[in-house]
Length: 406
Image (tube, rainbow, N blue to C red; front, top):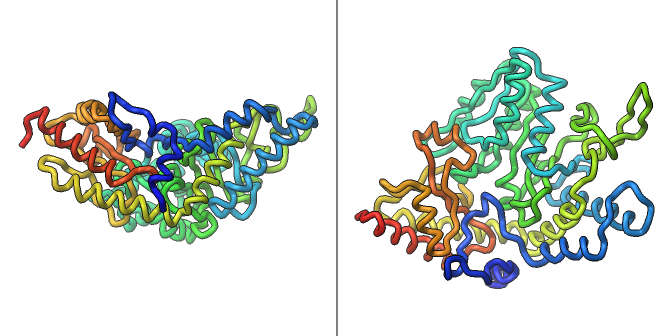
């Protein structure tokens, strides 16, 4: 894989931050965009714009067809069985809320139980918290060990006859833990329990096959997959989409409206009310093409090499502590420098053009478990190189010098 050629496809890397070349290590937050994606968005607005599914003029028909092409591309990208199983939302958070709301409305009663884990992003906890409040349900937390791995035997022990759904991340945005979701799904399905997988961090970085996983629901966001903001994807098995009620009511999600009744549109329109992010969805197809041009196997190999190189270099620095040591890890590295607040680390690194994130990363339950208030996080994207890591390490060393650490 010609990484220099790939990096050259991203216009932002021709810019400088604080008179330094940009070293972007915040892809877990949001990925940068290749020129092909940027151009596609501009081209649609400049030459093709129309709303979809309503008018029959040429622009509208073309936009509707392009929108559907993206749905087919997403289906193939995650190996879903049917394009009707792909629902577009504005982000993964909305996708998870859609499931929690509709599934909860139909299936959760007082005293029922929902299992999540101590690794979850707030987006895969707060929607279930709403159900806990509104339905008087119970949330159980599958524990993690000090390495950041879910203790599978403990999760299994949490399952009871009252367990209605399990919601679990595929890849932690703090430790980089790749969770054995297939094992969890098999365990759950033996008890006829559906599983929702938060795939926000996994979709950009590992090969996803929802048919092989056999998950009931899978959610991810376009902006982390080298695509535009405003696009979320919910995969759901057809049996659930046919059974569950709509999430939002309005135009486009109906087939007939009378004073005394409303009939809903067939899938997937049943869950896509109102004006959709047409330009962004159509542009997201270009993001998938970008990843396919690289090949997910090549991407995974490259990111693993960069991640291992970064871990090797950072572990050699005195006073640096890596958070978590999971059995199976992707390109997310959270760390601390002794006696230096993570916000100070991020501020000093920014002076060297190195963009990382500092804080609790929307994972306060994890940080509380580890007795931490915040961490610094460097996350790898396809455009990162060993040279980027060398500059990160130099910036960390300079941070230590600023605070007179030995």
